[in-house]
Length: 284
Ligand code: SF4
Image (tube, rainbow, N blue to C red):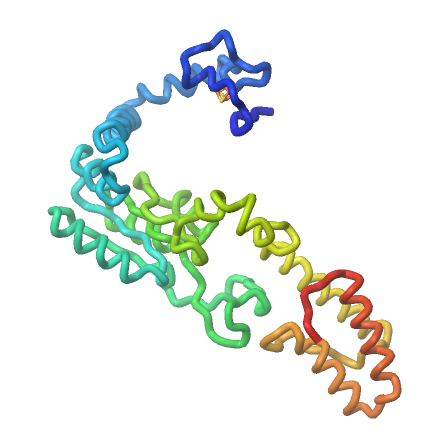
């Protein structure tokens, strides 16, 4: 396994091959040779030389916005694709206007194109931002295919969600560069959390607090409630409520309506105990 992220030798960057660590990837000669040959391919050579030139020409002087345009000019691109997030549509408009003023033709496609509801592709109600309401899914495949159909020379990605960006890269015919990496919390500066990972952001970055864990907990809640019904602990439950608290509250109300109030508190306390035992993030 390669662990460059933890290497302190940097034999690669310092031209000191004799100092290579034991698990240095440079010891894998066949992969290294194949990669080196890749830069000689006609489809890669000029692209790679030009983007490397941009690195040197604007080093610590040009913001990425300028680096991108200088690269496009060097490559002789004319028609640019702009795949952007709805949440960054004002920024996308500024970028599109700037590029047009610089002589480029710009085709832009928003992430919500198609207007397809999230349910239609199997996104569960409980992970929507506003459960119970219409939410258009992000559609990175359509963004890529529409730009492909327009034969863009190069595509610029502005703030697509994590994973949606990956799908856009996968389906885009033209090469893609990311102008904005979306981070809704940090003004699209993901490094902010990295810089503060040992300090202010430490708790926020803990596994138990992250979204994956919350979703797992919701899933476990769903399974528990289903079992609780099967065991006769709950008469029924509701998973379409706007908030997870409603799972419990509605179950209690439904129990009341069925006239089994005596068992209500027993059921309620078992649910509460289970929630605390599982350390679920549910307020009652
Ligand atoms: S390539 Fe080798 S020398 Fe360079 S960072 Fe990785 S392990 Fe260290």
